[in-house]
Length: 167
Image (cartoon, rainbow, N blue to C red; front, side):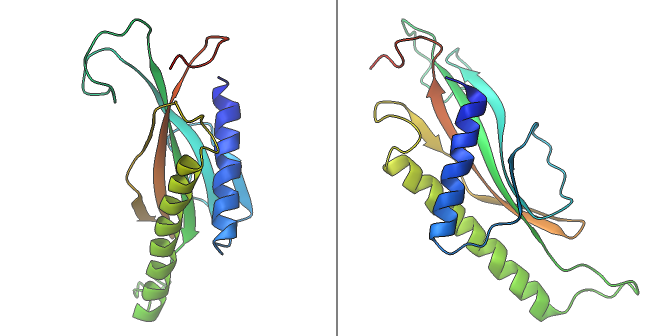
């Protein structure tokens, strides 16, 4: 499995799902190169956060049992960043109506992002039926410097074998 190609396909699928549900996407939509995103503009990104193996430990999504084959999972994060009001030059906080409007956008984004990931999994648009997938919690990040984000995770098993997954 090509991890970058999977990230690109996940980004395309999430974009399609969000657009279909009426979410207006930012102009910047891309696969991000690392875990720490620069919140410098509105954007939708997907990035690979880690690869997990089935060795015993708290990082593994699998039971601590012995498998005949090594199982690996790739954990991707999908982040939708939006502008939010900030203090003015006099140090006054933004008006409450502006904060409420920004909160509405962020909460709607979070809900739609969660629904998009669930639809992708339920329809098996990214991974075949027999491939283990986990959808993590939808969370918010920020506000940080005039930006806030909604984020969700999608973890899927992957293989390097030419035969694909062993069911």
